[in-house]
Amino acid sequence: MPKIVNHEQYRKQLLSQCFDLFAEKGYGALTMREIAESLNVSTGTLYHYFASKQALFEQLVEEISHQDISSALAEIKGMQTLSERMNVMADFLIKNQTDFINQTYIFVDFCQHQDPETITNSPVFQEINQKYQQAACDCLGIQDTVLSTFILNFIDGLILGKIWGYQTSDIREQCSLLATMLTKYLEGQNLSEE
Image 1 (cartoon, rainbow, N blue to C red):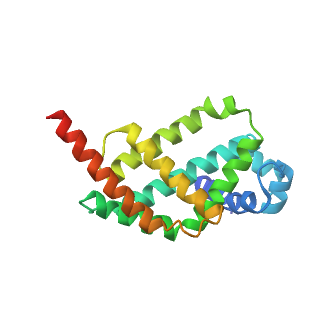
Image 2 (image 1 turned 90 degrees about the vertical axis):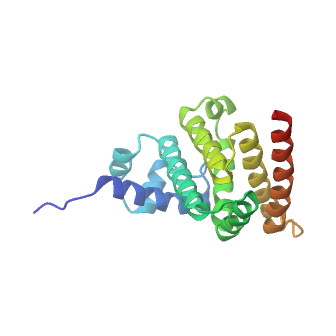
C-alpha cells in the first residue's frame, strides 16, 4: 500500500528545517542541491515543493510571518489597555528573541544577494509587510498604518540592538516607554479631532 503524504505538512516541515539551515549557513552560501542534501531529500523533491531557492525563501518568510502574527495576536488577546498590550508585546519579544535575531540575520543575508528593487517590488514581501502592519494595528488597538510602521521599525530596532550587543537596551523598559509615548500621542490626536 502506498504511503499517504500530507504535502502541506511536509512542505512546512521542509521550510522549518530550511530556517535552521539558513540561520546556520546563510542564504547566499547555499545552493538548492546543498539544501536538498542537508535536508536528506532529493533535489527533485525539493524542486517539487519549491520552484527555486528564492521561492523557497519567500515561502519560508510567509510561514514565519504567519506564525509570528498568530502567536502575537493570541498572546495579546484580552488585553485592554495600550500599556497592557505593550507589556505582553515585550514578553513576546523577549521569549522569542533568539528566533527574531536569526530571522534578521537570514533576511539581511537574503537582501545582500538581491537587487533592492526586486525586494521592494516583490508581491510576496509587499503582502507580508501589509500583514505585519495590520497585525501591529490589531495588537495595539490602533488604526493608523503610519503609526503601525513606526512600531514595527521600533521592534526591528530593539532586535538590532540585541544583535549589536547594547546591554542598556532593556526590551521591557523600552516597550513601557513606548506605551507611555503612544498613549500621550493618541490622547493628543483625540483632542485635536474634537
